[in-house]
Amino acid sequence: MEDKKYLFGPVPSRRFGRSLGVDLTPYKTCSLDCVFCQLGRTTNKTVTREEYVATDAVIAELDEWLKRDGHADYITLAGSGEPTLHSRFGEILEYVRKKSIIPVVLLTNGTMLQFQEVREAAACANIVKISLSAWDQASYGWVNRPHRQLQFDQLIEGQKAFRSQFKGQLWLEVFLVGGINSIPANVRKIAAFAKEIIPDRIQLNTAVRPPAEDFAAPLSKEHMEELINLFCPAAEIITEFETKDGDHVQVSQEEIFSMLKRRPCTANQIVEIFGMHLNEVSKYLGNLMRTGQIHTEFINSSVYYAAKNQIEKSYSRI
Image (cartoon, rainbow, N blue to C red; front, side, top):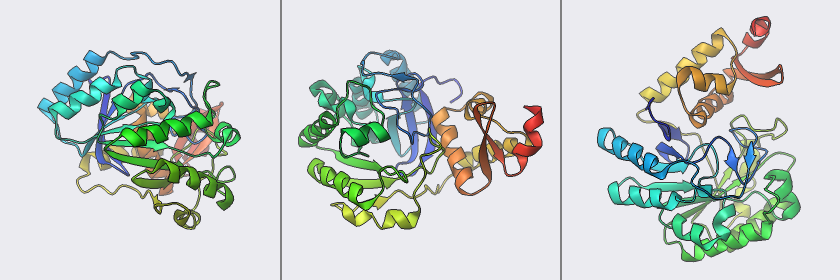
């Protein structure tokens, strides 16, 4: 996949097995700037919908991949930003549905679902995953840091309107951060809105990968287990993906860890060295962080990843 500009993976996903990613926006072009985002802070916060990357070029890469490889559990519109900001994302969903039996997934923050044309395009997916991590405008600002034109009430109404017309599977992700939106009283408020949206599945997530802000603290499994029954239907905690056929995944992760044992690197440096997508690198770094093999430290105002005890040894060489 080294020659691909818009496709990445297939990568291991906690929800979707081996997922081929389709990236439709430049890095961090998004309507939100969530404190927990695994890709870092939003650099282009916008609500402008346009053809950020050429639709024909994306379809050409998909066509080539389907002919040459074509093995994945899902094809997922995700990547470096909010896919529904791409004005023709629906055409890409339609292409995959016509040309492949692989289910296609749209991962969206749901902000653009207030618009009928976006709801109609999103309805082409087999599964749509939306997000809800706030309960009013103030908490929306704390957790998601939305574009100034976005209102919490519009988010809820757009998601409810989409549910009413969408015949596929609607999954709702609730991202919980310690000290911000995780006390039971506030989670109950989120759960009340979730009940109005009527998703097929509700999934609790937390900052298991390095977040945009270091104050975005992850919750323990025990804490999250105490919250699942506040939702109806009861929420599920997203568990780590365990690959059944993971030779490529394991090799990639081992290669990254081997390099970090030699010298600290930023996530973007790893992207450049291995030619991976930032989303893919983030997954591997998250796995290594959770298993205690690496840690982070700010050096010259940048976040570096290193094997345990390596940052101190390598500091003078950076």
